[in-house]
Length: 168
Image 1 (cartoon, rainbow, N blue to C red):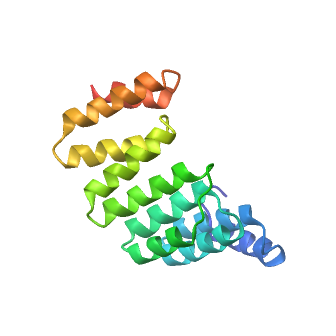
Image 2: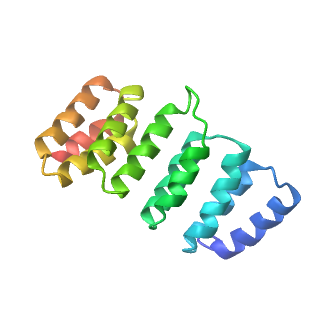
């Protein structure tokens, strides 16, 4: 059944109906719905999941989806409702950076992404987004320098090393 998101949705809706507070089922349902190109329905499910459990990775997914589908007000609402903890602050900074970039605020996006990397130097998504932002701003040398700093700070991160290697 690989790739049968409709069937997955039906099965997951049955699970969520029986166990409405099962966060994992809500998240997989959101992914199945998103894969069927129904972003608003997926965002509703992400919001339900976040209301049950303040998970940073879910925050990042939800904000990225809202921002990429032209719903910055939804991303802002999700961010406002999210209560970051020391364990999720890196995710909150990344999500704020994603939203700022989507809203055409590159300076704010850069600050937030750099803040996320200060907290977690090997956070590949933050690093990739920062590099893309700097490249788009015509600052490729700074993008390469950011990659080199991250690679030096995280020599054991194969993903960070690969990003630097791919840069050439």
